[in-house]
Image 1 (cartoon, rainbow, N blue to C red):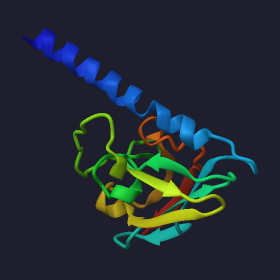
Image 2: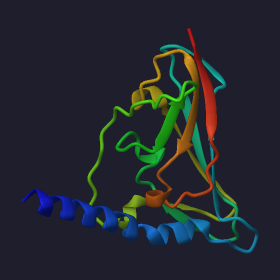
Image 3: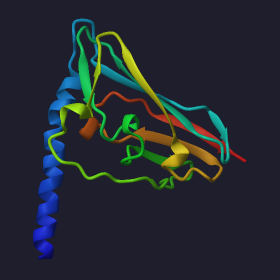
Length: 163
């Protein structure tokens, strides 16, 4: 029984990534003017312990045509899944403490956000609501959910939490 469960889990994981594979092609598409979808994350350089750590997550469409991405595993759906790998300056992984959604594949049409040519979409989210950032330290965050969302061109961020 345990082997069947493990096999089923492996098949479902494969299907999850295979179903959104076309999203990567869409976001990496290069239109008449350039680079497809480019994502910029930003946070304040310094935040006092206990204050919100506000992440601005902006997706720019640098192409000449409308493109889309899957909002699953992005800040556009809130903390329904972990979308960042965050490490402190001593290389300790910061634990995610939000929900972990289970998904039916393939994603429905409403799971996609369309970005018109030359435009952008943004969302602000408090990282404290999904990650344990209570210790004073310098943190580095990397977006790690491109396999689901298709957002491959995303910068890394760093910030310092002070007492």
